[in-house]
Length: 184
Image 1: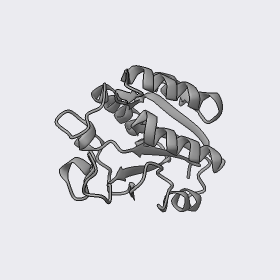
Image 2: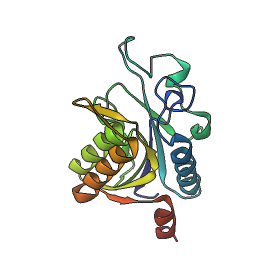
Image 3: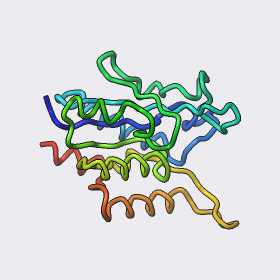
Image 4: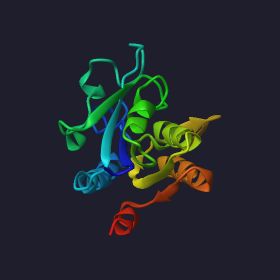
């Protein structure tokens, strides 16, 4: 068995058009994530889907039991793929993710999903702190415009800022095409 796992993080209905919290360029990010997922499914790598549900019914999205909290149809797990349910930004926080990865002797993680500036960032940093070798497929991740101190920050800038920060010390940040070429 491979010592690498793909984490597909929060590619859930609320992030897609028609959802409660649609992300910028989610359709393209999702296509790229699906390309990575299909490639990994043809290998011996472990695939783990991480799904977020807020425990508070006043949350703006991913409400427990809602259609919006379900994994998007483009990314549905196969029967042999594990789904980890989380209730916080960090995929490792109060979940069995670390134990699952350790059980499979995983050393290398590949991350795709959303949001670049929240759950991808948190999972990447936590994974790095746990000693995993982390790769983030940057164009298989999506973000959203944010506001800070009355200033709107465009999703593209948010995404670029977080990818550049992660690439500095926490992860190898590459495009889908670069990652696929490394697999040959």
